[in-house]
Length: 178
Length: 313
Image 1 (cartoon, rainbow over the protein chains, first blue to last red):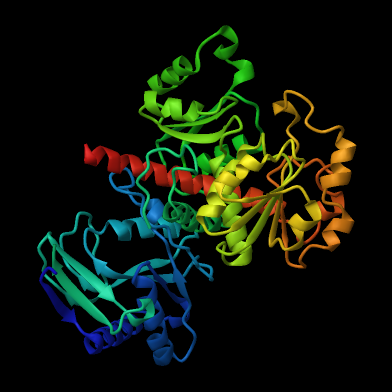
Image 2: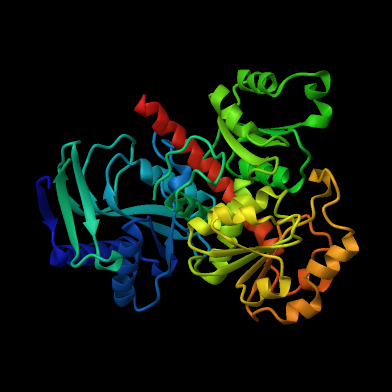
């Protein structure tokens, strides 16, 4: 077993999400225009949790969607075909402020693919990006609007998010040496 | 989830896990077909050649749309209007297509093993769209997808394949796919078209149609393939319909939730009663919709398979 460090435990994850939700609420005055879209795997569950917190802050329902990015990746030629997840956007994205939610921001390529994939559903007024962990090493000019935790990493390290929704015993973010 | 193959040549060489990977991937692609924008850029800049040496309409159109929805460019090549008429061999034709930088060759051929042969002489991805009476892998995958979507599972289901098994590549691919996924497969039809040797593939053979469909969760009807039969295997179409066709009397004795499937083209009034084909239990048109998603998934997965083969070298 390689060295594994817990960088966020269940309480820290919950606290980070609560803070991100408040920042989203602070940034977006027109709350009725905001919808969350999670990127699987991980971001979809985080988006659902954020929506729950936000609907408590705003006192109204916040729409949540799931967006698969695998068909829009730019590295399809260089790796095994990625797992395709179902996309569910149960609302009209036109004119909305879409907050993309991902677990880890790394090269920025997933975010780019997500913006492309989102365009197939319409033209949002704004797209913002919320991530639980920003680990650096960007390869594209992409920056998150809302960040749970900045974690400086080496390229040979791997960050994994474990959530109870996907069968983990407890919520955790783990940093491992490869 | 794993897919490391560069080609899709048959179902026989796939594992249950690989088959499941295709079905899971196709789920995502089926949703793409239901959007306002039915196109994703996954294969942008790639060239796909439909090399159909044996005539086909639905499979060719399905592959054509699948490639287009993945943003690939597609060229159709049919035997009637081609250099085959001028005596060119399959290998030379394929090498010429590769010289034009085709990335995928989808082949339908009357000779069993033609796709396997091409996969040995070409660098392009080869996808079998039906070779002789050997295999028709994408049909089996879309059949498995349709059954899983409707029934929620495949393992443990009773699936009866009824009709011309001997000359059917669909039957062979279906048998491989469904038995690998844990279904109990029964074959039924005239003794001349359903020889006992099929039991070696892990299924049950019977010539009693009423018994074959009584406990079936899925009834897959196959067309009598006149074009592949060298001599008459049964006295007449009328007799076949009477003895093995799915008519209203037989339909009434099936399980109330048994699915009726058919790979098409259907011969109404021969292997299937017209009203049954149009009934709520028939999933024949869903199979067509699902076929498109399966073919998108296959193109998407084998493209990734190449990447792996290259990094391994």
